[in-house]
Image (cartoon, rainbow, N blue to C red; front, side, top):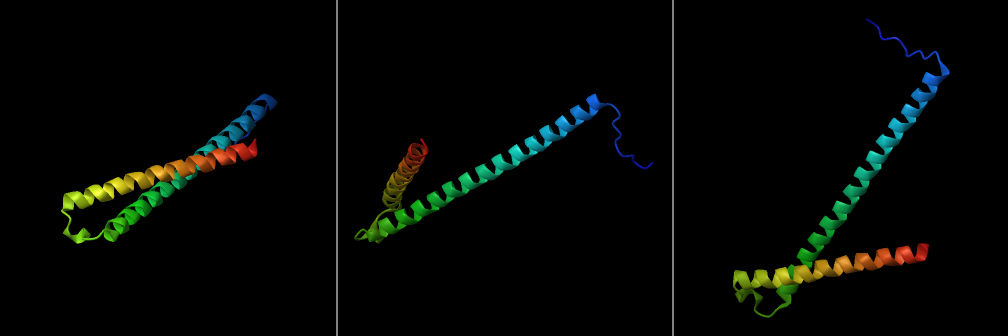
Length: 105
């Protein structure tokens, strides 16, 4: 059986069909843009996290006698530095977003 093209005879049905096409296209576009936006946000968060871990590791190595620290003490120093770094990045992002909002107004 060969599929036949859709034939719409009355104007009412044609109008509703065109509305449905527009609605479907809008829904697909909205989903595509929201998925793209969330992917970009998670990439930035991952980059910030990796950046802070690298900075924490470098900070630990600047301490005198760092290689003599116990693993628990070294981890405590790195975790504390990491937490401060991430908090600073959150504040920086909030400041940038506030500046963007103010400049738009």
